[in-house]
Amino acid sequence: MYLNPYADLGFLVLNVVPGAIDWGLVKSVDVYVRYEDLGVHRHEQLFTLRPGSGEETWMVPVSHPTQRDVVFHTVNHLRDGSRRESPVATTRRSTLVIDDAFQAALNLDFVPLYDSAQIRTVHADIHYEDSANEYVRDERLSFDGESPPRQQLRLALFNGRITTYTLTYVIIGMDNSLRRLPAVVSDATLVFVGETFNQVAKHNARLR
Image (tube, rainbow, N blue to C red):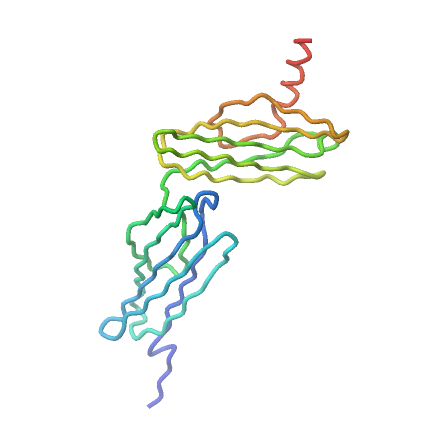
């Protein structure tokens, strides 16, 4: 008797891909996956995602090719030493995209619009605070070069109702001059870097 393992047995292939994870808050994510090959065997695997992790693949021989249900859950290890777990879920998809265990987040998109012929570097300092949860974040994005790319920043939130943050720019000119602009409070998720630079300069000129 000829047995074709691909036709008669089959393989379950699962790709585990890091998704929206706030690596400033999350140190690593353990992904627990389990497949029940009915009446035959239970297959289990642990994947650990860290900053810089890429796609990982799990291939399991199965005796019921039409049974594709994979059970999974995640454990987020936070940088303060605490843990946050996701609920157990089931998927039949071949690609499992893993997000962090925070349902709310600030997803900020910074688009440089300033004159890079006049400005060497821009530092964008972002401060977020949720005092009730004793949660404070301070992040810096730096923009350099003639054509600085847009950058994204994800801030996972304990309280999704608190969406304001403080933004301060530090500007370094081609002549090595340094300017720190006044801090502004915002809830914008799309931020045009340079949009307020000239407005501040004109305001300062009127005060002289």
